[in-house]
Image (cartoon, rainbow, N blue to C red; front, side, top):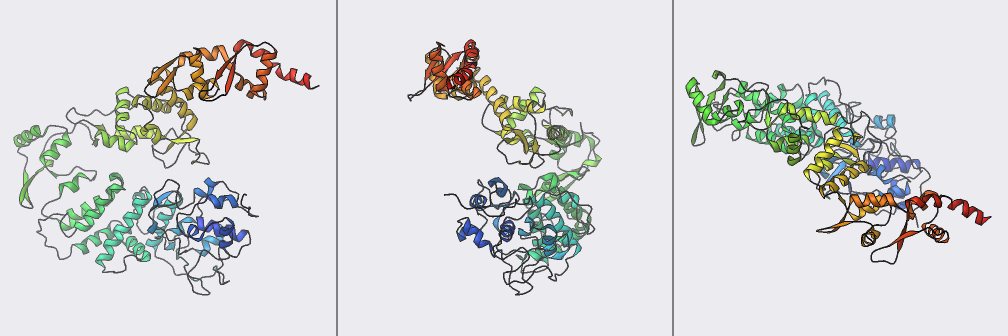
Length: 629
């Protein structure tokens, strides 16, 4: 028995909160609490109070497709039980506050629904109206609940519209605006008046942005001796104060950390008083690409050079930075790598040139760095060189596929690299990435989660075929033979391809790799018959097969020959809208010869008719009509 439908079943908005949608649905259907709606959907209390709510039951009663609700749900079917999502962004459960709802009454009144970013723990204010969020009813002063009569009505009957909420600072509003735009997928905002580095922050992945906010806030609160380091309001305020007027406020934080530290310290950055924030910034490499996080590390290096001036600089820090200018004091091996020469040749050159050096202590040992500005040697080409594995990861394809595309010339090498410095130039990598990205149309299809599409990452890194087969599919994408229909996240891995076209090319490549043979299922699809008939057709010597490790494969030549000679009655019956059994009787009564193939392991059978006899079957409908009259 199917569940009863609601009287009103509006569609969810793209940026709507799931619990907010349930509350709006309850309100529009006249319920005094969403509990009535959830009971109608036969959902238990534990199902409706967590991020693991399954939307299948809810979709049934509100007459919406499950994919519509899945896009705003807090967990997707294949996600880990300890993870959750907000509009598709992968989060941890403690980064959401769905059990303690907060909202901006003005936003809800203007939009008519509750936006999803209010479910985020760090969303402590409204960046649109620059006020704190409402968390308690102005009437009964109790915390807000999802189980209330309406979007702007408390369960006590009081209205939430006219609450007097305190204003938030400009830096907090700017930081929250950036988080809101990120979670809702909105375009980047204009330059922020508070001086936040918006151009750097807006390119970060959402998880990296939250981690950065937490890291900077935690370090600031440690310096301020703030014991309440789990308070979201204080976290946002502390992080905004560090990011505002970038990088001056960041420098002030670092100065406060190093107060009282001896100026002649020789223990280095990584183990000194700045060690905590040093390790925190570099621990973000797992979720923040080096290019995106360099603005932080460059500011950190700038402070060390100009303010702290330690006895020596940690070279591991220097290697991770792109300051726009080459580092002056580097090791001999770093000098050799920069100019693409052997380390022994670099040592001889530096000795012949008399390049000055400086020695410093590293724990119990001594190390030496040379003044690279005194060396008169030009590099072969400006730009960073990446190893094969790094280049493949930047593009979003496998290592073997990149090697194959480079060997075939599909990955164009325009910047020559020294033989002593193998790798991929950053400009060539970026050119190939942009070449693939430009294939995506400016407007994406409406339903990106449709099974009609497949991601480029699956095409380029899947296990379905050989590297050469994947390379041929990528060539088909580059030549637009296999069109790109959209993009999920703006990356190469997120490009979307039509699933049917990809499957067709993949089957063709697999057949070519197996000596122009097809599996029985693929042969059956081409012949428009049941796969169980292929064994019988092989035994009748109408098809030729080759044994393989897992069964047999049918040659494409025999499939093409069979298709020229025979047509299945099933395909003809489908065309003229009748049954294959009726056509069998017609052929028998009119002496039309057929070939009958039996299904393997069953008693069923299907028939094929000679291709030159199909004209006789075309009059089947006329004969049937005459018989009826």
